[in-house]
Length: 364
Image (cartoon, one colour):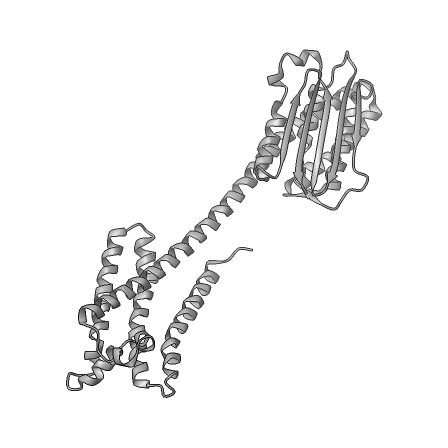
């Protein structure tokens, strides 16, 4: 399910709100350990945190989207540095702004940080930090806040772009697979129509039966093959129809043996995955003067589907092994690489002296 940009923005706002709510609650719960919270001191602490919240929001919603993500690095770092210095200066001057010099004891209380008040003994926290130390502490804290916001924003943007890239890759894979299937279909139709043309002159009834079978195959190619996956049983029915159609032409010359699992599981596979291999077997494994054979086997072992196709190899083809693979095997290789990871499938091709064997393993 795709996450819309609006939902991502809402999640981001909720996350920021939760984090800063927890940050703002720290002074309150720390003061509660004293049994009598000093509300004046709490308000001062919250005011300090509010200043850093402004820095955080300006960075993640203005500087990062409009400068850093657009690769305007110099303006980003310049403005970020200026804002940091200004905010740190305001934070350092906050005690003097809240309490005039006429009441220095209150100003000194406001300079005592909550964190140090909870970590150090009473006698060490009563002495205010030197101005330069307080300035550096505030600067480091502001840099950490800006850095955390920038890091999160960059990671969020990277995840969005990565998801978009994967969606684009999936669409490209679908387009490539569709093109590969369209390459198979004209080749298949050409061979089938040639078979029917031959049967018209030999046996009209067989030609009529072949046309009916062809209509079934065309329905499969037009509708079922357009889907990403198809049921294994329907794919096997398509293979049986294809083999029966090819046998109408080669009934006497070719020994065709088909071995299928007795019980076909209700599983999905990519359509037209084996038809290219069968086309190659009938195209290159049939020799009219000699007895030829084509053996097709499907078996399921654990979570894998194994397909083995063996066909006789006429001597005239033995001298041209480079031409033996044809467009079918090229397409099956491309399709498998688009559909599966390299470790999920295995395609073994054995080009022997008198036999050609293809072994394919895919997950189911």
